[in-house]
Image (cartoon, rainbow, N blue to C red):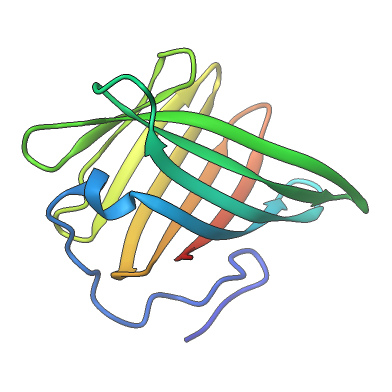
Length: 158
């Protein structure tokens, strides 16, 4: 396995792990380790915390709640986010922001899924890779006039 300064996590060593039902697979609690790199400035950061996929009280979707500490430019702050995951009848899903705005589709049936999300003038390109029953990776590359960033996350089942 290799890594580079701009992509600090190891390269995937094996074929992706197919998942028949994204919502069922993601259910529960995960430890999250994320590296962040601003490619324009060279500033590096890290997020360490948890991600929980749990019932929302509305049978139409589950909540994806992340909570932890973000270290950025020598400062440590509490950080988190909440997303909604709507299951599809074929094991796929749709991810929205907490306010219901569409974020991206999700199809883990081959064990790998690429997404693209435009945000103002910036573009977010993401890759989900399922490594095993208990681990998955998420890579976001953001480009545009406001951002030039790389985020790599490893999720491990708790």
